Image (cartoon, rainbow, N blue to C red; front, top):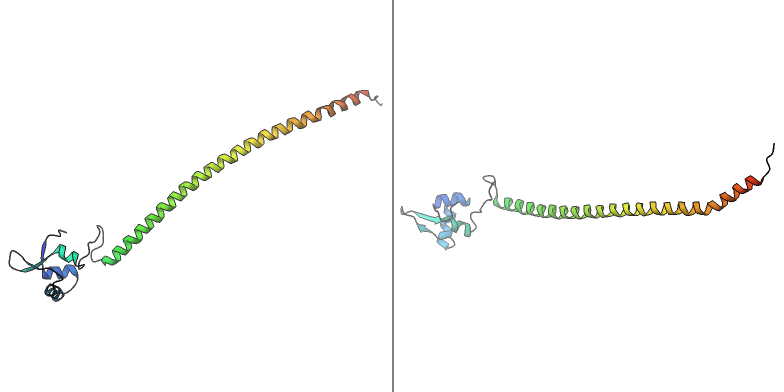
Length: 146
């Protein structure tokens, strides 16, 4: 919408969603500037309607005839939801990183446990070797029974 465009009072009233008489009263009070267009008719600039809050700029894609306040509220809610989604995605990315780190720690702990188990098995085998050797000697010393 061209904000510098001049529109008749009737067209301005249609844009503002009010009566022509209401706009005429605003012009009389001085709260809405009026000009004379090249054809000699009374007119107002679209920019003045916007400044007076009589016309709201609708975002692209808004349905025709939608209430500007409701559209603005919906956009604000959508922005809040987008921000919440971005925060959630960021937290999810951090959580995934923490999960990866914890998986690595578990793998490291399992590897250390396997090494410790091997060391323990070796120590136990080394400690049991003299006892096995002694049993073997005793078995050779015993007479065979028939």
